[in-house]
Length: 389
Image 1 (cartoon, rainbow, N blue to C red):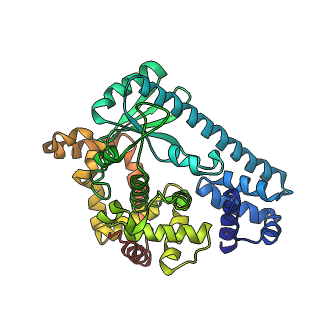
Image 2: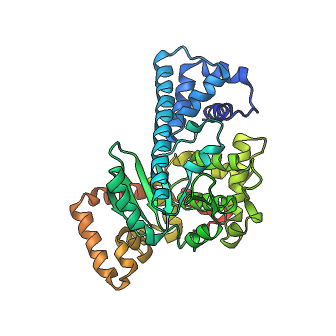
Image 3: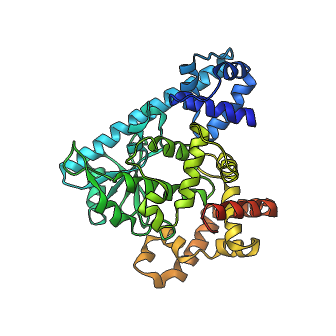
């Protein structure tokens, strides 16, 4: 695993135009198809095979295994196509909103993509845009009428839509989260900076964007993992002084996320820059690499064990969802909290008759395999990061 990890990060560095590795040693190692295959497996876990392709190309490393080479090239072409399609769709949506005087803020990958050496390197699964809550209904109607979008589902913070060709758009109207993102919606609009190329297009201020990214990563980490790309984003942003992390970021300081921000920044430097590992970053590295791009059920359940102090309490928490989690599933509870028992029962029926029992059984099976030592290790990691279970 050690050599595989080192080779993977060396190729990501190469793709990003960074140094800090021995090209000859890397080339010799990757000439062995089995070594390159292992790197691709790790990259695939984090949705980053296109970084392997770009790194090999920039270093002039050619593999003799044609089948593996073709598979790697195919992933890069898919990334280029996907990003081109996302960019084109984002442009169409923003233009539509601007024409209809709907203030909007592009979020996440569509913004940070501009900071990468090649746009396709910062691939994402969907488009994220924030609009004001009172404008959301009209925005959805426009997307359906003018761009032939279809509504997939609604939550208490966003509307999920798809284009006829399958591009996914998450139209957010609320970014708040009781755990790490209190009042973020108001903060986003208060600190937003107007774009130069459109009347109603805004962008999060760099400080708010950095805070949002770290808070979002913290939330994902506690739900199974945040992926290598989230750490790479921090490395990329750190090159620009306007993106403020750590104790200098007032929002990170107010929400108690400075320790986590410092650890992610330190890990980013160790992976992609000239930094050194510490005990905390080594533990964080293990957790992030194991979790893949979108987290694993094992990691998520282990974190829940640390919160609930054991399996029995965890099982109860899965049967009786907290009001906060149930609100996310049933937005109507936001206005009618007294219906909490009704929706709890409704959820049980959904589990019984809509395939939920299989998911629940899988969770219970995974929970049986969780070792006490892993729970202790995760508890220690979260505590050291300031993310108290």
